[in-house]
Image (tube, rainbow, N blue to C red; front, side):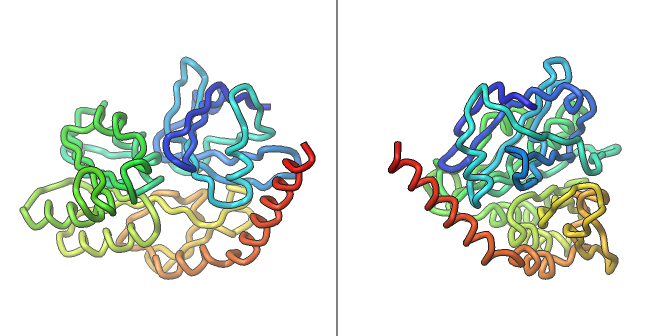
Length: 282
């Protein structure tokens, strides 16, 4: 059992847990993830490691309440326990000899972006960041990103904070101005990573994305997380989750992400109905 040491609401529907997991904290590196279960018989869901502290033995995860399992996860409080918390899984990222990197995070993608930028900052790399959300109150981890960045741009879809528009607008402006980067990291919804990669391609700058396909076991056995990268089938759980964005078939990824949309909707409706029924009997 893994104890939730603290819980924080970062934004409406976005939660953060600090979990007691010393063995994972000692091995974790930027780019890796965990798979957790709330209870015995529950669904296994992957969450990127948003931060870790080897000395304290803690791992930080951030998630958004979207479907049945994440909504149930959001009901847990400080002092509650998770049945399973497995990791670190996936390949860690490396940035050899980089001097200047641009990091872009959209929505929940800011959380997995943070440990990468933190590592770059600690290596003495100049870090420029662009983070965005639909609205100001949905923006997460702004202070943490600014602390590891030499320059930070804030964007909101509705203009309630920072620049009015998508993060890709600022990306395009920087590239058109002739800004040079050793690599650009984009993490967020698949459509954001696709559009961002298309903007970057003509400039011949390496682009890293972090993929979020359907995943079950996280060890390469089930094959659910397969994606096409460079014309070859890759398993995100063992070959990623970070890949060269110019080689990813984003259209296939987005199509596969919708595979169980109907079943997910039914599961959520059933869960919310059961919860409503439980409240009526309290």
